Length: 496
Image (cartoon, rainbow, N blue to C red):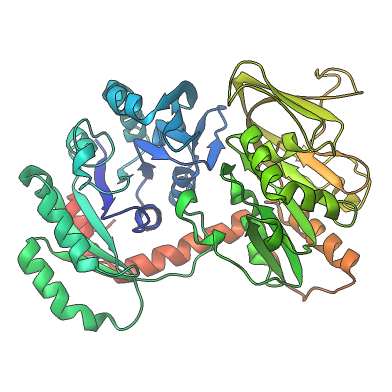
């Protein structure tokens, strides 16, 4: 059986995902077959596996850190919020249906067999499994029927590291208060405390750590500094949505309420002269060099939102001057019409932005597939993307057809990128720009159009770049944690 260790947090965004990834990388470096696991994830950033199954991107990131192929068994339950009180429930990579929060709370214990089956599949491929919890184990109103924190730890007999975020303040109260709210058998599972995101001289924490260990009865396993990394984070709490200064090349991404898979644009953050700004109003849009309409979990409602707050008008006004690129839900918005006859989202139909000659019908069957190839020949301002390589995936519940081009078939498919031949572009492909040549072609086209020159920056392939980030993460975590204690918690008395 695989060794297990679980990372839980005092709150959301305490750093569980990155610490899990860091441990996955360390164990991989030390010669162990390692895999991540999270029984239940809530996120709008998702991924499609080679088997055509959907899972959260956080576990994809952790699998990459472990050097293994992402598999849906690493995240058997994915909740994709559709409103403030409901989510689409995805089990083992396939849509189970939409549920209200109350209905799911009553139902979720029925998913324990699926969770345990998925965990056993992970055990077959790993020597060490690093499990990530969700939120906090001290959510006492959710303790009943818990399947993701201490409830899961009990099911798989996992020791726990408890992580607190000192950057937000009150880390000693976070850690000690969490321990106090745990049941005695739950507290016994906590084998180490971790203070995360510290800025400054860690020796200043010595007296506090001494008191924390005395009152909490659990040793502190390390103090991890605040890290400047370019890796995927929890979508709802990302720092990427903070206001950014406009760069030499300015890319604006419309941040509607249901924004999903905004990881598509992380690649451009590598280029010093490029800014990626997430905007929520016409006033914030200004005059960027490119506008992205990203994916959406609720396409019709998000288009209505753009219509109400003036962003649709602002985008249309700029469209003749700069390129507008819609991805997935954003691509659907650019068409003539979106229909929802089966009530996949909110039902009914809505006139689109009318900027691409396509119509979309939302349907219950979700498209989930990986795709690889070269971008079809394009006309217009982004013609330089023609022939650029891509390796991405589709994940959507809409069927899009040309207005004048006939139905979709193997002989008559919609191309990877659809264009009006001038400035408007749309695609269902996530990860379209992750390849170096494709990202560079886009940015250099924008620079040429603007009449500016970029510095000689070597934009790496995004996959190579992320590998270096995982190594940087692992180096920092290894130097900050008492790794002998961590291996002792695992039951390993020596290093390979």
